[in-house]
Amino acid sequence: VYARQLDDRVLTLAVDGRLWKESMVLYDRETNTRWSQMTGVAQTGPLNGKILNPLPSVMTDWQTWRRMHADGSVVVLPHKEQQFNRAYYGDLKGFVLGIAREAEAKHWSLETLKQDPVVNDDWDGRPVVVLFDQATVTARLFSRDLDGQVLAFRAGKNRVLDEQTGTTWEPSSGKGLAGSLAGRSLRPIDGATVSRSDAWLRFHRKSEARP
Amino acid sequence: MALLQAVSRHKRLVVLLLGLALAAVLIIEAKLLIDRDATSAEAPQDDFTQTRRYIVPQEPITQFPIKTVREAWDDLRPDELVLGVTVGAESRAYPLNVLNDTPDHKVLNDTLGGRPIAPSF
Image: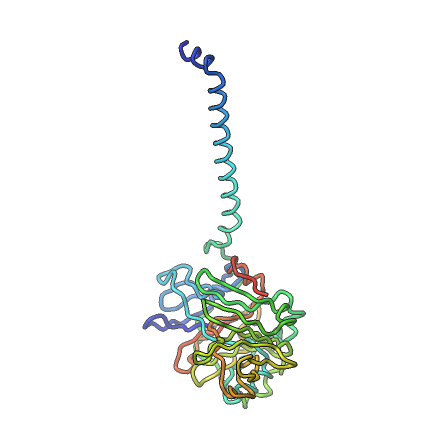
């Protein structure tokens, strides 16, 4: 999901109907620029080279989302197929959580996260943590910096804790559940997204594979 | 005649020079082949002219029904995947089955938390 505003101009995006590197091409009604849906980068047209800013988002199941955001809203439109449910991920092989900015990219395999669901890492020179909830197949990337305090996380028995305060955290939302940081929220990193690994690597050939 | 004499006088040197020239040509040729291979593995796919059509161009979608999570609680299956977005105090779920109803794909022109956004999958 992208912000469809560039400087002062709001863009109206639509499906171009072509695939580039097996991923959708979008166009905007205002300038007729062609955008890659996978990267948000304009490939041809008046805005060539411009980048749509990614927004923090999460791919999770309805059960998890409706519980976390009971006061929120949902787009309801009819559809023919029912192909995207938890079974879509199969045994998780072939899916990654990825993050990219310009030429830099990193990805974490969901299959590896199944074994080790908490990974303290860094991105763009800043401390981040990958939290994975296997039951709902929800992989997220959060900042480990909470008001200047850098936290380190570890997996406990069926829970995630930070070493500094012992607070337990909910992996799918990044919310502090119990402990001195209960009620606080980790900041999600913009643009972190779950995708098929082959698609990810088509666009980010030099992406660094993380354990 | 003088040239032939010079060549025969410095036979070894001439052979050495010819050998070096041949080696240089071979190295350059090999380098070009390697470069060509590297670019042919990358360029055609990365080139934006290399696209393929799968559906006709779609008109922008700016109007679509939105329900509260409570209203839609049982409209979706519990294990159905959604793309969830939060901007400021507002959050909205976009079911993946709506955004990607293969071969039909949608990008929605929405506004959330006062910010124009475009979810797609």
